[in-house]
Image (cartoon, rainbow, N blue to C red; front, top):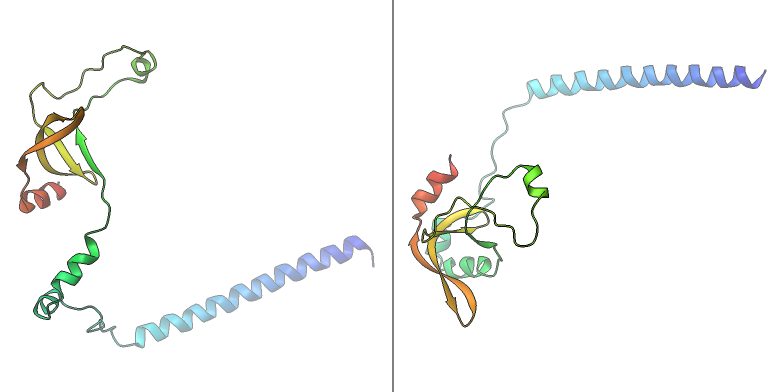
Length: 148
């Protein structure tokens, strides 16, 4: 037998095995589908997570709160924004002025992980910039803004 015939025979056997494997997989899927149709509805697991109300009643509130107090978040104070064409962006040089949509004297937005939580005014303390909070966004208002 020549090498070409051996290779051709091997390729034909691979195709035949592949078709047999495909047929077997389809048969397994039909069996699995029929078992799923006969299986009773899945019941959600009960008692996996502790209810928040029971944690407070058990005196675990402080312990639960302590777990999240050291999680770092990104706090950003936004001076303003603008849209600019790439052509104009490439023409910017040292000393260029970019006009923002914020007005002078207007409160700055304070964002935590990108979510607005407060507004305030810029202050300078010991040659460092800071922000004095003038308006805190209520939790209900934060939720309303998230739904937009």
